[in-house]
Length: 410
Ligand SMILES: *Cc1c(COP(=O)(O)O)cnc(C)c1O
Image 1 (spheres, rainbow, N blue to C red):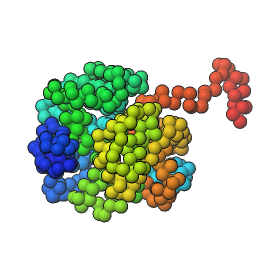
Image 2: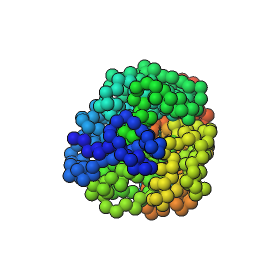
Image 3: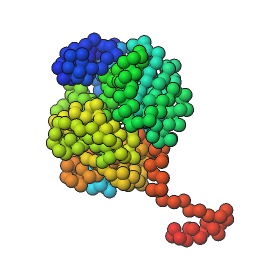
């Protein structure tokens, strides 16, 4: 097994051996995994994939591991739901929700990247894993690292939602809450990563970690009956997921699983942290860092590492970007729950609200096939809805009291 050629600089193309490194020594460009697609095409067919277990490892030839998967054996293969109620509400013909709010052990798409990153960390022989997180990554590394028997250092902004902090603490990692925003946490972690031989999943292991996101795209294609959609709407934090969804479609084409690609890729961000969408709207290649201020904390990266590459994918595919207010996020969470019975976290609200605006603006065609990516479960960010839901009916424990309420409901 193992179809990796090596690591390659995205800027100057210089090649490196497979090691826990992430920047080019010459031009400081980010490194990316490169594969031998000719040998993958021989090893991997639709039939082979279909014969395998329903987890993200069914696409293993296109993932950067050498041996057997060691982490996240039950991650991935989440539902692709045809959302007819929501389609009617939004006035589109064919709408699908890629539902990463369920199935994953820690209920967010981060189980995809962490499954790959920790398998790779074990292959490299690391005994300690670490991450800088906006919330879901903390949760996922804490959990998968526990099962894999790894020592864990988890760095988060101290201002994260209480429920996300508890959901990480339960696995007893070394949780370090930093008095600063994500970008400050990330800067600190880069410094720590250069001093200690730890596998920082989104720093020195990042090239391998990021590849895990492709599985979301592979699944969309397989679940649509081996077709790529006309439009896909992706939430952006660092911008990595968006670039990898596109890479997944291109790789399926490269190995002959898909024909010509006509997919447009769309970015969704919160207005309170929209460096990528702002650059797209202004038609510039320069991503200007911002100071995040939004309830969508899982997307609150003001200085996105893959922002430039995400904006290039959007341009290349003819997509667009849209940003939405906190109010629109909350309304969209409600709309999704009311129409399709799915409770998504704030990032899901961002994505649906952005998709709605893109449809209204005519940027997403009403008679096309559109997939909206829901990347995390709403039970993780319940605080965001405090004071924004309907109220319970309070009654006395007797039938009269109940029937009074029933009369009012009608
Ligand atoms: C991390 C995350 C994303 C996207 O992250 P990228 O850094 O852009 O890859 C999207 N949704 C949720 C819920 C996340 O936690």
